[in-house]
Amino acid sequence: MPENLTTDEIFVNGDRQILARYPNFDPTAQYFDGFATDAISPEQAARWADPTGGYFHAMHPSLWGDFTWRITGKDPQGAVTKEGGWQNNRGGAMHRTIRFVENIFEELDAPGEWFLNAKTHTLYFYPRAGLDLSKATVEATRLRSLVEYRGSEDKPVRFVTLRGLTFRHAARTVMDTKEPLMRSDWAIYRGGAIFFDGAEDCAVEDSLLDQVGGNAIFVNNYRRRLLVLPHYQQSMPAGRHKEPRGLRTCRREQHHGRLGPQPSRLARRERPQYRRSGRDVRLRPTRRHGRARIGSPKQLGPGKSRAEKERSGLRRRHRPVDGAQWRGHSRTTST
Image 1: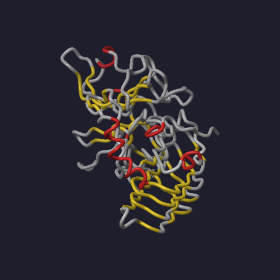
Image 2: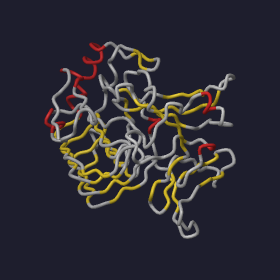
Image 3: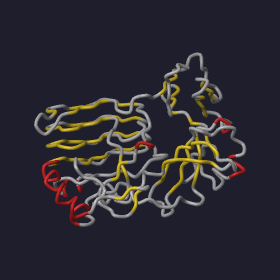
Image 4: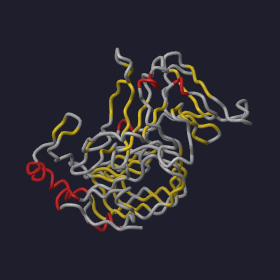
């Protein structure tokens, strides 16, 4: 493989393949397509010569969502060392049983699994029965964003409509989901397969977002009169996000070693920006196929009006509306 190729996703004939994992992929499992209590137990870790670069995933104890860590190696006692878990804005323990690991060479033991050795630049793949690799199309993701429109309040992007298009195979961003939102349960990554920053009179209509590795549509900072009409999402770890400029965590509890600023100071300093940030952004329910494997719950950030959030038609537990920045939790509309 090319020396500069680094990827977390491989597609064969358009289908995402399984990053070598333990336990093996089980589409009937309730969580993670398979989970095991002993995912990073000493006995399991003893089988791995060098797990550096692997990923460890665990659900929140209350099943709010999940955390992801990157494995950095093993300590002298053989225990797994790791960094991450910052996808939750409040911190918290990991679930004791709902866990799994991936991207570890020794777990390459089932059809459809693959592993890329970053040191030798060798791609290992366990093909499914009947697959002819000599005729197959093999693709690796590299781009986090497929389309970006960047403007500002003074010079916004204007009159862009994306209609009847397919956006496919963006790179995973779960380890970049670390920016805390003010009074949100979850952190965000400011990017997406489709990204608008400083936009007016733009729309995404009747389009397919297929197996993108992070946020589907992210609308950032200043925006006016944006429209997202029904579109299809196919098996992605995160969904639509929208969050204006100037808002950061104001929680005083510790966030992975960091403390937010005093809430009163932040509110006085940032509320004028909040008032200018978003107005008349309409989100309609999305037609979704498949399910998310990993990633924080979907979020809608603070907007100019509550109606902006209610139009989304998304359930709060799985698609939280972060409307608590100024007046406490805002009402949501169930579907």
